[in-house]
Amino acid sequence: MKLGMHTLTQKRGLLFGGDYNPEQWPEEVWAQDAALMREAGVNLVTVGVFSWARLEPEPGKHDFGWLDRLLDLMAGHDIAVDLATPTASPPPWLGHRWPETLPVDESGTTLWYGARNQFCPSSSVYWERSLDIVTALADRYAGHPALAMWHVGNEYGQFCHCDESAAAFRRWLRERHGDLETLNEAWGTTFWSQGYGDWEEILPPRTAPYIINPGQRLDWRRFCNDQLLAHFRAQRDVLRARTPEVPVTTNFMGFFKPVDAWAWAAEEDVVANDCYPEPGDPLTPARTALTHDLMRGLAEGRPWLLMEQATTAVNWRPHNPAQAAGAVPLGVAAGARARRGRAVLLPVAGLPLRRRALPRGDGAARRS
Image 1 (cartoon, helix red, strand yellow):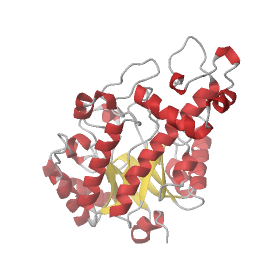
Image 2 (cartoon, rainbow, N blue to C red):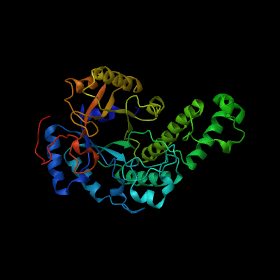
Image 3 (cartoon, helix red, strand yellow):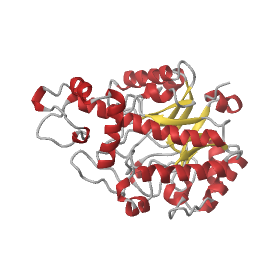
Image 4 (cartoon, rainbow, N blue to C red):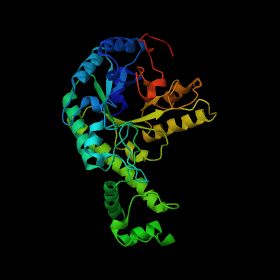
């Protein structure tokens, strides 16, 4: 039988939990975290989404001891782990030693480390280093009793307009169009004197005096989707080779345009979505229902996973009114078999400080 949500729910029932980032807290509180999670009914947590720098503090030097202890702790409390590949946020050493891995925007500006998503999807060095850490994780945790699912990357949709991306784009265009005559016809380059006579003339859409050729931009979006999907597949294949019994997923963002969710859904075992409804918008219930229906369609009617959800405050809104009643059951009614908040533990630093979690900052249990 094909892997899917049933692989997770047949023993656990409806899944409940969220992201867990214990590396931000002293290790002596982890046992209390686990006890509070069990008291709250948590049975699945995502771990390691942004932990690459902690797992590999120097190139090729791994520190898995803390993650070993954490997964053992989760297994001891019967809490399943959705273990992430940390490839969405490379450590500073990658950009410092190999600046060609850093993304470049349309204007030619390099986007540096200090936030997240600072990678070029076409960078051969990024591919090499990211697959190395994925392989190390898979080799180490294959067969671990806490491991229930793999979470590849995070919220895909990144772009890079650098020269390495330009070369990859030209290769993609050759495969798609075959020759320049066909490409020029498809892009309508007779307009505004845009005809191409050499493949090397073709670049990604970059800052220009006026509107970029829409055919070029459309093919560029298709190429970017394909590059990201290829990187997802490469990680997935590493994981499947070592843990064929563990389902693999990544998290969509509703109708987010940079990825072709229909192409991606066919490549993963579980369809998952991040849902952050805007509580002040009267159309939010309809939009949320539409997004949930999209997930049900992507999953071909099978159960899917509500990976992230803002049940209360988030960091990017200037005001955080209360969520409407029924926002959570709506996802379950639309076929979700996991209700997961954004976090099960408050962060101690960083951008998401204003978000809410299951326990209070002092570790005491609370109801939300």
